[in-house]
Image 1 (cartoon, rainbow, N blue to C red):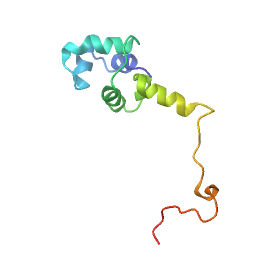
Image 2 (cartoon, rainbow, N blue to C red; image 1 turned 180 degrees about the horizontal axis):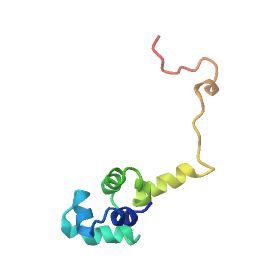
Image 3 (cartoon, rainbow, N blue to C red; image 1 turned 60 degrees about the vertical axis):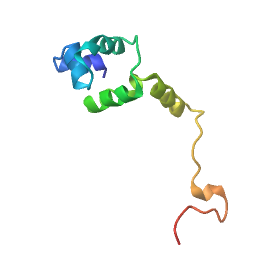
Image 4 (cartoon, rainbow, N blue to C red; image 1 turned 90 degrees about the vertical axis):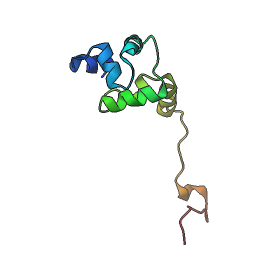
Length: 97
């Protein structure tokens, strides 16, 4: 789902959407640019958008920083964490004895 789709579904103007996201009504052009892919949201705003949309607009879809991290994590070449057992005999797992 997109920011535009949710805003439209809720019947909000750009100014009303900006206010609901904790911005000033005059930030409506910024919201429009994010909706149209002309500008990326800041990390803080992207997280607000995700929360505001109930998770229907994931933060990584509107924030370049998070998008890069998401793409790297989704890459088939991304490193995976080895289980503690694979670290070798006698490896400590951090458990308190």
